[in-house]
Image (tube, rainbow over all chains, first blue to last red; front, side, top):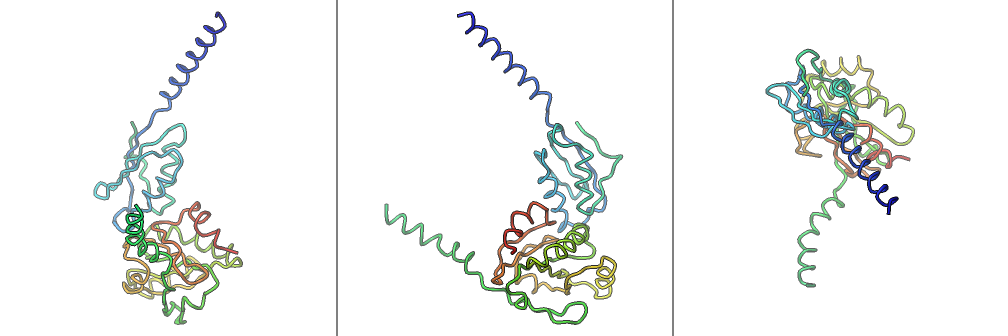
Length: 101
Length: 157
């Protein structure tokens, strides 16, 4: 009986520990301004490349504001990597005007 | 029940057939060197018809990758063909191609050229043509390495 209680206690402890780790790995949101994104015909490549990046959960592009709003798992991908991906599509991720939540 | 099944088959059959029976595309153009390029000349090869423009940043960004793919997989039956779209000035295209050291044929395309393959207006856009001359896939946007691995590499020798 005692050993059964011990097993249940350990299982509950592990569940709480995993939930805490999960909460720490929160989704992050970054707004990245993109230089040179003028043509509506070719901006789809930025969205495509970002969406194909491991850890990226959601991408919203705005041609008017020339920016990408990216939601991502910061345990899997960094904002620096997202900038690298954008730069790889021929555009330029602007450094100073970005922000993350 | 059987009647419903038959009706469903009748409704969807044309869609399936369209995908399978697409005839080889009769593309012929003069490249920037003045040579005639016919898609049918590359029968037996896997051809990537890449629509691009000099003013399109992702198009320019993927050209070094296309040059590398042509160099690395040319011996395995890959042939890249670049077609500018929308129409551009020949001198401008020539200058770009020379500077980028493009190792595959480049032609100047028109709306009709692109309509042979797709109505999609995005750039770049790459049409994957199988060894039989038929369209296998249309890759919209920059060609990602994983797309090459999954959609093009299995078609090569």
